[in-house]
Figure 1 (tube, rainbow, N blue to C red):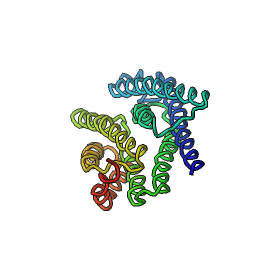
Figure 2: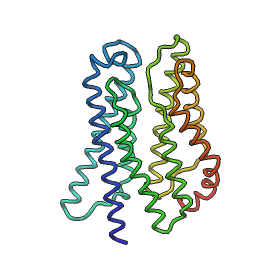
Figure 3: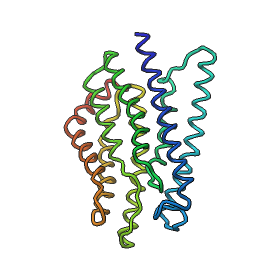
Figure 4: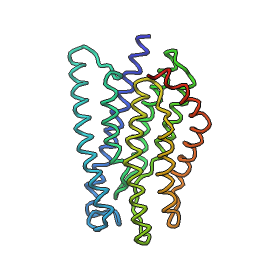
Length: 260
């Protein structure tokens, strides 16, 4: 039992740490090389979208790095003193740091390497799944733990990345507002859901969350439909909604007894 707890503890620390290191590296290099390069995503292109996207990315990197650095120092001190480090006791701090950094990951800039970003997200998702698995092995409600992992992974993929657009002005402005609103609403919601999962092994199935996702992700898809269809978000937003309607409602009814 002690060895199992130690494994999950270390694995979750590694997952969050690799998420930070990989995404931080990719986003930093993208900012450096995109000042003059990157075509329409170059900072010197003078497109208003880039000013906002680069500002959000830079702020996310600065704040996220400060938060993760504080966690790494705390981790190092605990290990050095031999007192040990319990991830679950500090999980909210790790989730906040990961959420802050995720804002930058949701901004498409020049030299964005989607494959590298997915690798970083993969380590974060692995940590989420491990938390659910740990709950199952600890004698919790296996239905809730499994559904939590599936639902939260789908939800994370339904958040649209902010892309540039060249549609006519009225529709373009509406699209920009919709996609930035989606990121600034859904990333924090993902953070709240992740925090619940990391602390209890069960995420939040509150109905307001899929409702907001459907509204905002749906708006970004619909407004850009005439220019290009974001099939990735469309598929995962649909899958998230279907998952909630099929199993999430039942989970919501059973959730309070186990998580409060």
